[in-house]
Length: 319
Image (cartoon, rainbow, N blue to C red; front, side, top):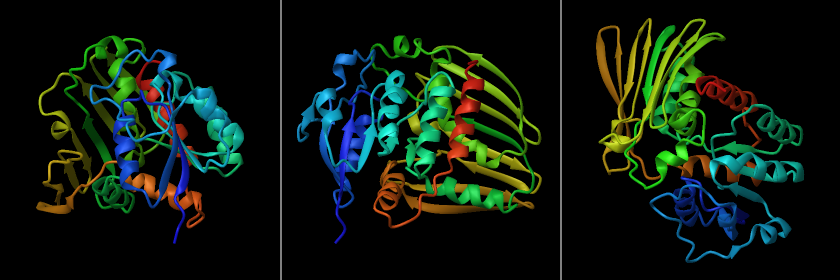
């Protein structure tokens, strides 16, 4: 019988922290959360309106969390501005991590953490939430195999309908506004499908809405993000146009009990690929991390992809 990993959940104030904790509660064979570090004294500027349920958690101070021994994996879930600062501590110690996004408003602190983890062959999994999406995993392989021919244009949007008080003020603390907070997911989604090096970026940046036109040598990309949009995650869309056909995924993910469906139009013929009902956004990525930490599979993290995602995200945000 496999042993669940001794897990430190560091922080409660990232937007994804409530959802990540809910997932970990389901994955008890893989993770045992031995402590949750309370980052409230950091003065997080915004609190997710879902709230963080710590009712069954061993909540400790950050100082107590840093003194814990025999920790197998750390989840870094502090507010965005503090993520890389905390991650650097555990990278230095050589502890496996799942760290939420985005990865800071400059490149070098993040690069330092990545290279420390790479040098120690320690997984440093970033919480790009679409990486476990079965439709996208299939599409990335399909595109890599030439299924759409040469990808010429990609359009992706990631609107939402947050109404939490203080959210706009929170986003205003970042130069890229909502493109910094959400755009990194879209950049991570499109990069496996673009052709050639980055050529140019033209961005329109506002606190609550933003768009960027990104030109690679062989592929043009348009990404958009906006708050206060009806439809929430069900209006998020990805369209990929290649010389052989088009792929359309709308919504990009869904958790309403209906099947996730990718539509293809190739050679004048249309077909749909049904990926069934999505049960959990985070579980596939976290189960994979557990297998790496336990040594059941090799560490297959693509550190270079992670660095490139952040480099392009910073360009999109004018940083």
